[in-house]
Length: 563
Image 1 (spheres, rainbow, N blue to C red):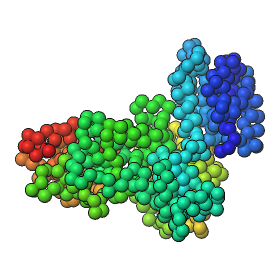
Image 2: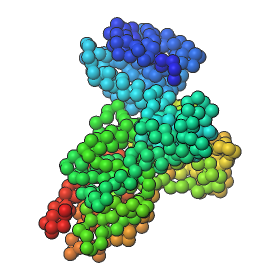
Image 3: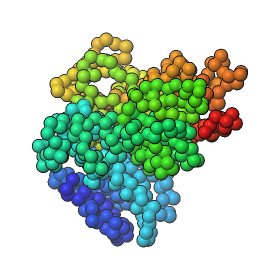
Image 4: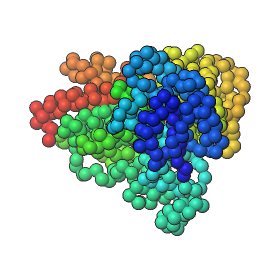
């Protein structure tokens, strides 16, 4: 993105102060465009679009000479769906008079947020909000301008798509270069003769041929060969989604030696959420990537160690001659922990219909695949699923795609999706919902071109054109590797506390509230039977498990076996 993106300010009464604030902070990196009326603003937007100029933000006063700023922001969304929209409110009487309307219309997606017009210099709260919105715009629309890693590829393949998705989910700013480009050829030469594409150059300068998401994860966050021999961690956390990250932050901050292992992207499925609006403490919302990567950095600063890129294969208690702890097996690597926290979350169920699986990575994606959203401009895409993740994916895709269709087997979204998301979907013209419908087929060559839809329970289908399919189906627990000594319910979720069958209790006493049937092994988040399957509840359980870990370690010390 070589040209400076534009910031459009629609302001008349407060033009002097608003323009001064934006020019003083953003004039170097953005072109400040001014309009004083709604009509002028529409002309500026159309001119930018005709010139193919990126528009990052529209900030409009509530009261304009020819109408209401909130109405204008709603109308302009159709002309520039990716631009962030801010309603500028005069503090005091104006805010008091229109507070309820501002809140309601924000929930209905007439704009992204509302902010008080700065009343003086160094209004850092105002600029923090603006910078966060511009950062989210830059990441979602064009990717980061400054990159820490580079990937060279020859064609768009599932492997390359997986690399893009992994980079996005872990917040790794990366550039992607075709093999024939000067930048790509430079990296190919550095890799040496016969190096297979895609090739990854990491932020350390290391070259990784035949790169995959798993190989990138291990190269970027530390290989398993770096684990010190004989080390026994106080707490070994399996899974780095919200539950695992919260457990890591609280364990490490309280002085426990903490190791986290994750097979995929740090952040788990939450990392692919384009915007979470109901997480405590983020009134303007936060992307799943930013939330989980901040948690990773926080845990690492307290001393937690992360190892990624390989799936866990097993869990077993140490032999009787060793002090009590558990072994977590990752291939031929054995990692030891006095306690273990299972936070592996869930995995999306496969659709299992003809013609779909072979197109995964070529128009068909499991999860939100936020990296692909940028390439959906002008296309017609479908989202299958009725949960919050599906709703967030649909809203994000609607910023780019010509149309987004949510396909759900239930009669409506109300039973499975948060009300704020349903309101946002209803207020987005590009999104439609096909209830009581399912995907029964699909195909295309070399990428997805069509889907076959049918009414739920019917065998009669209808073919519709489709450029993309995002599958966010019901989820299964990711814990097939657990031994039989860890009790699970019929669906495979881990049982804890009093939900553990009474015959598995020790001395007639149930395990602790988040403890499994195997002493010293705990479960938190989506993998646990009875959990709420929400980011906030998973984080809460991850934090709540650490006092139980302390209690178990105290018990080991009483018996002289925690060394």
